[in-house]
Image 1 (cartoon, rainbow, N blue to C red):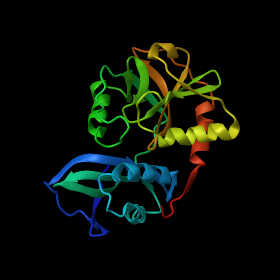
Image 2: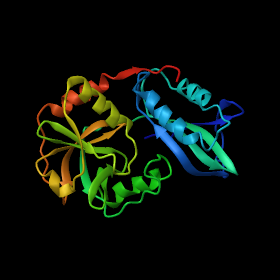
Image 3: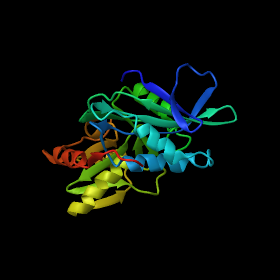
Length: 257
């Protein structure tokens, strides 16, 4: 991914970040989504997730105006992966926007089970992103799978779901994990066509013979082709391709939040 064009929220407007600010601190909240030729899948859910997380930090800031201003900066042609964030700044917080090129999506992924859970805020996206990214390098895989007491929880940067026969299984809401916008979109389509969805708990070794997907805003659906030192996986021909197309069909022109 190329270097981003970085902007900050200052005095009620978005301005270009023209220097490396040594006062900028850790990320408190962040969100990102894929934009293809000015369209995105349920971008309002990403923005709502961000705004609801930031509001307690910045109750007097017009977060809706910030969201409107930054989405207006996204070009209507090309592939982009914008990021909005709130970072520590002095005694308060600062809003920033990164306009980043998006790489081509991947359709397959190799999984590995993480031996530890580095998350400090499982329900909040932002503070743990860097250390979660380190997991994939640590285990030399496309995505590291985090466990809670041996139970599949989520990927470092994705949601984990699996198919057992023709039933889609998602991680139980009793397991602390980030609410996934992409998973919600997949579940919406399942409800539309009447596909069964079960909220489940499972250990990796219980997924022998299952089809496993990772879900993320950047790549959409990636089919796990291997789980290193884990279960033997299978793939139903045509299934991921169908769901990927249905997910892409949910793209809509980005409008004012």
